[in-house]
Length: 390
Image (tube, rainbow, N blue to C red; front, side):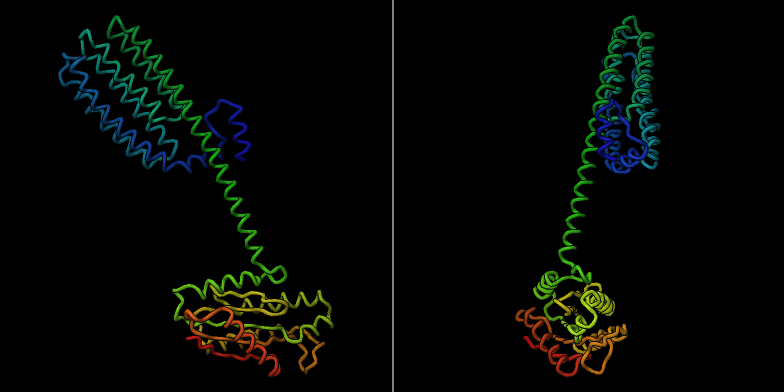
């Protein structure tokens, strides 16, 4: 969508997007636009009042009448500015343009109060006000055109009414109105085009990051079981064991191995063996419920779990739960050489308290030795050991 919008935008002279893109633009730029309008309207309000200083030079015969006229008009602009903060985007822009137009017309009326020969010079204030609105506040171009037309007509009529030199003032009004509208158009074109380019760049960056995360997930995932692979397991364990915040925290490493798996492959075939591993891995992962715990395929028919914050008794109960979860699958295994006829696992459990001297390798080695004992003890069971690395 953005690429098409950029092509269309470059090929035209428009300052608007499609409805959907315009809504997105308004949403993305709303906060910055609010801040910009608050600043420029506050600055414009101060300038509106300060133009009264020129009255003493150009309109010496009106005294303080110009000041009172400005002060009477100022609350209207303040109310419009407050209302704009809570209005929709379209209504906000309309309120801003309406208040700006009102201020310019008020400044246009001030010279009409005077009969001084220098009164035409006072029309510089509304002319500057028009230029300020179009080039600094930068209302939407369509609204700027309407506001400029109203202000120019009002100023031209006032200038022609006020002085025989009004025709010269009219020329200046038309020139400033045209130049400020052109500046308004170019500013908005630039802002809109920059938005399109930055949005496309942000979209591409997001897509690139998503692809990078997807590739990372794929590189950390075992293709058969969907669990973490050996590399992801090694990195996770290193982070857990090397984190200073984990010192003094109990930890358990569980190694599970499918019993008589070679016989299962020989009896049912390797495709059935792969399906068996997928089902068994799902049961093991479901039995280990902690979101921060790692379950990975360690290699072949072996699986590993690294559980932080679990003591020896709870680790043993968890190992027994793993054995029961696989037994409950009731996957037939008539190729076994023992009396059982369904798939089971053996589990080796190693527990310890994390210390600077405790290593991942030592924990895995202890769990592997416990697994070996469980295998030698008849399989379909677990053995546990505590590693004192203090």
